[in-house]
View 1 (cartoon, rainbow, N blue to C red):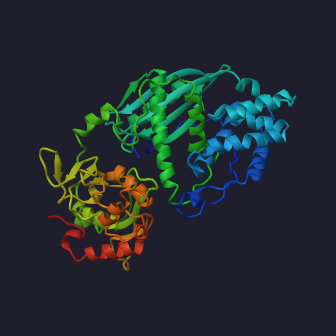
View 2 (tube, rainbow, N blue to C red):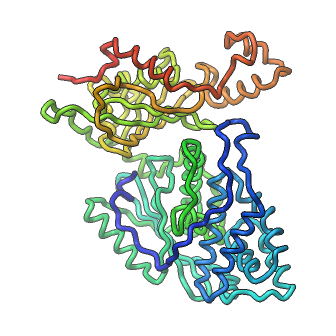
View 3 (cartoon, helix red, strand yellow):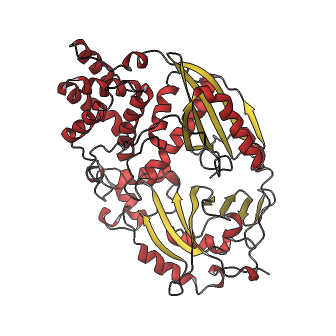
Length: 505
């Protein structure tokens, strides 16, 4: 988490509510094939839930509360499956409209205000034409949204920023604060909805909190199109991470004013702003703000190594994910926090099956570590431990293996655990899918390989089988993963001093 969002006092929203949006999404099967991975939806139950929610929207409520309810439905759909929200709108709106009545119209009006899909708007218009009365808030919701004030507050180190914006409709203003972590693909970390009338107090509060934390901020006043570009970049990066993380465990439905409903509403507001002439930023590549680039020339001072008097190091549980893979390829490992980076290199290679025939580098907030190279500004990894470059839970770094294929691994410290005497470390406690074959050409080459191996009629199919040393495609199993086998392979490393926890003099 960036210093911008860590420990912050977030401005409180004037909205309230206790309802949790829980559409009827069936639990997906734990299989990677498209048929099994698809999310099944009980349309009748889903429409019934929506109509029940619509009954709560018939009073004289704040229009934003209606939008938030619709945003919660859409957010739950997106979390259940990438792109599911758009398809559900096409299926749900006719069924809701067919049910008829004020509850149905209320739901359709709320969905039409948030969804980037004309189906809800058309259905609401047609239902209203039959004489169904609209809720009291409908007239205000139909008014155009106008751009307000926009600012970007960025910390001097370039690690994070706060995007603040207000939008006005029918004389009332709503504001959003979006926290962005530039060290994590420029992804959004948090979002808050607040009363736009308290704009100046919110800005002052953020500045005051930053000052108390010892952070220096710069302030920009971007044009609406630039603000939209920056905000959508952060929201899109977070959406990619959410889809990757959704494979770990079943995601919970978004609660009232949780991140996902408010982010969905924020996207609807952003669509009222002009579109930037700049193309969308690629995820995780080349999108770091200029000020962050400057900070990389002056990496933070490396923390001191653990002293013997401090006692044994805790056990770090880390997740190592191969960047850019879909479905995601990752490993969850447990190892002493004071494991040396040279040993960590061998542990990661073992967990993913890399041979070690190529160069590697650890990219950290404290500099790049690997084989010392003055021209590349790579510092020697030998004297450095994982605990030094990732000193706390939530710390992140990147491990890049093979500068040609460019296999980038994102490492995050998930938890610091007490050491268990009967456990042999390092060990693997979870993961997903086999790593790509080495020297296959990076992610593009691996995607091609998957297509070729899935098509026996492909002209390169036989050549690839020969290259892989396989008699048939049945032996190519990219979905295969065995945590116990990885742990066994890791146990073999303990015989080598280079893989042991390092304790440098």
